[in-house]
Every structure is written in structure tokens, then in C-alpha cells.
Image 1 (spheres, rainbow, N blue to C red):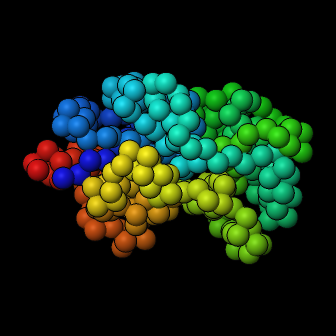
Image 2 (image 1 turned 60 degrees about the vertical axis):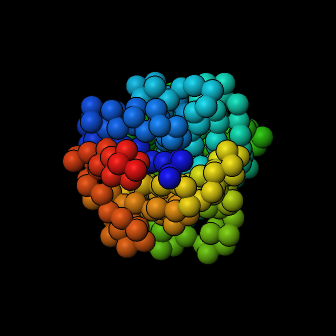
Length: 269
């Protein structure tokens, strides 16, 4: 029997209009009633997840959430931090230099001070809105070196970002966990972090074996948790890379793929 299901949000739990269908809400409610831990695992900040946790009734002492691609794990009710691996303002200086060298925009998300970027664009504004964060235009050099940063993102037009990725110094991949979460987003978190490591840390904390875990997602930043899970699932709208590593492919996010997955593997159990 599966005891924990971790799900990505954008392109997975959420429909394209960022809503959650009634069928999916009901499936999650029934899974929780069976004692299954339902965990949202997102690249978003906690501020960008909280409204959905409330909508799904996933705010209690027994509920947990993974934000910043698994860098931060916390109890949704008490806000107790189970695990947190932060970056710092010092990392911002390193990554800002690289972003200038490869010709892309960059942003950072601070736990205390919200989102900051040297240049506000439709993409940076989209990230700020999605995460319910205040956006400040300022150079990364101005950020306090000791500031706790959940993640940095190189963010630009897809064709610009693709070229920039080809130019990234190889040593950067040893310094950070680098995740492509969207055609326009390249995310940088602590080198020991990804959603798979986050789900494993939470499962270990709860005494749940990996064979009892389901993970579902659609993009590159979901890869590690899909590989970790006892049952790794790709959405019908997932990238071909994600589909190729999954053990099961459910329906798309527009077709209630998460609900179909829960109904098949948890509620019919």
C-alpha cells in the first residue's frame, strides 16, 4: 500500500488556468482520509503554495510541503522546518557574473525579502505573481551575503536561455543543483537539493519506505523524485524525457491526471 504521494504543481496538480478540478480535490480528500500523506512538491516558494494547501485542506500538524525544489521541507501547520539547505547572497554574486557572461536575466528569492532581479520582465513578473512575492529591482551585488536564498533562476526567452545553457561553465554543475523547470526557467538550488532528495528526506523522517511512495510530475525538475519513488509517474503532458523514466503515464493536467492516478493506485487498493 502506498503511504505518501508527492506531486508537482504547475503542469501536474494544476490545470493550465492554475485551478484544481473538483475531481482532483475529491481524490486528494479521499486519499488523505485513508491515511496517505499528500505532499505538494514545487519549485515555488511557500507563499506561492499556501493558498493551494488551504484549498486542499492540507494544513494540519500531519501535513508537509516541499518548496524551492526540495530545498525547504516544513510542516504546513506549525511551519516547523524539517530540512532546509539555503543558498546565500554570496552565491548571488557568483551567478550574477555568470548570467552577464552568458547574456541572460537572473532573479533570486529570499526567504525574508521576496524576489529581486536586476531587470523586471514579463517572466520575472510571472514568477513574482505565481509565488505571491514582492518584486524589487536591484543588482544581486546589493544583496546581503548572509541572506538566506531559496533559489536563483536564470530566466529569459527560451531561445536565449538555450544558448546560455550551452555556455555555462562546467564547474557550475558541481557547485549547484541545476534544474530546467520550464522552457524559460533554469533554477539553481543548493547542490544537495532536488525534489527527489527532498521526498527521500521527508519519507525518512516519517518512517516511510521508498516502495510506499508515489511521485508525479511533468518537467525536468521532477526527474529526481520520479526516479526515487516506488512508483514514478509522468503526466500525459510531460516532456519525453520524463515519460521515458516513469513507470506509469497518467492523463494530462487538463484531463485530471492526478485524480486518475490516485483513483487507480490508492483508492482502488
